[in-house]
Length: 120
Image: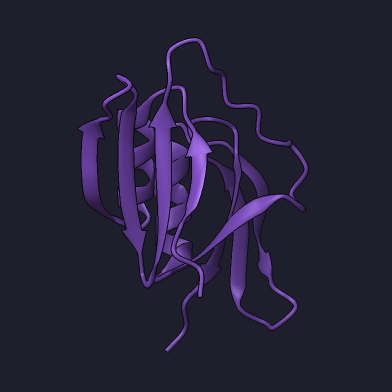
């Protein structure tokens, strides 16, 4: 069973704020013994962990095939809010292969994030 996925971030606060806007809950935000800023955000049953490490730059792959996928409620309302906040939309609202609304956006580090309507 997957516990978490861990990423580098250039701005821990921006990363946590972004994923909170998508429904995540911050579980940890601290400084490690090495002096690195660390945050953990719960998204449903899974967790994303972010490290902000001086001198380290996140380099996510720009292709949509490498992404984080999240179920979100009311994607049609959320997507304009994200755009208004300056979030880049890389694949506009469209039907997923399963017929649900989906879109792709970039997180603050340029990581592709698939947003998929959670349905009922």
